[in-house]
Image (cartoon, rainbow, N blue to C red; front, side, top):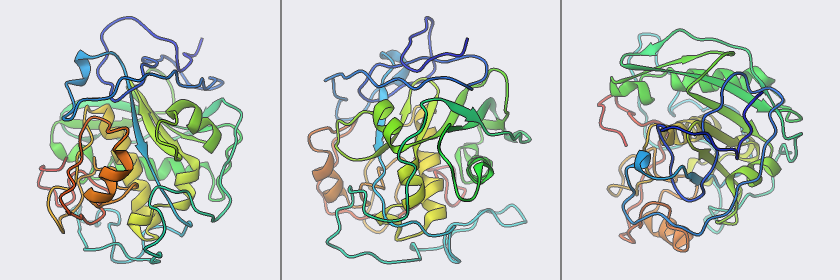
Length: 317
């Protein structure tokens, strides 16, 4: 019987984070599994995070604030790795520019979003070779039943696979190897949800649409965010989506939230970039729910960045 999010298992688990105690690892395929609402908890994270495996399994909430959808990354942004395999890097986030008065945490009007699904989900067929060196992890890609993408299911599956197989992603650490499968036991699942289901599983401690990681092994991507992007990425949909994938998968690898490290620097992928790439803005947005870390109001503003190792130096966060 497929595991239902919200039901606990026994035994030690590899990872969890943030506030809400939730489900543990499930076995087998994920088809016909029903999504359960998150149970609330008022315990907040400490100012500097914690060793996640030492605590009860908790929910990492990541707010992904957005704007109108455009196509994949325009020329000049972070695209796929070059044919030679060497990572590329370009400054800035090309594409549409949005008015400064828009709140970075709001979901603005735009293209239609997948508002509601059935509460069950389907595995997107697809397999990859092992990417990276080090400890091996397997993952599946899933979409909630009732959620339809204009580009088709493969558009989601392919971008998840491309992103996680990129040397600028988590395999760039030199200690992680990832392989996509579409059946059997896996280490984590990347699932695209409708807006309504995302609210149920991610909670609403911060009153905006969110994507989230639910420990120990569930990466949930909010469909509303998937189709409308983020203000901080200025219309660069491809890189926004890569950011969302890398950020939430980062929580599976025990990575906590972090602030902008220096004014003008590339934002750490574990910064909540869809809120903002400004520490001052992010501190204001999260002040009632600080989520693992107290963001300093130091005026630092980073540049949007979708990768943990954007220049291949193994120094990302």
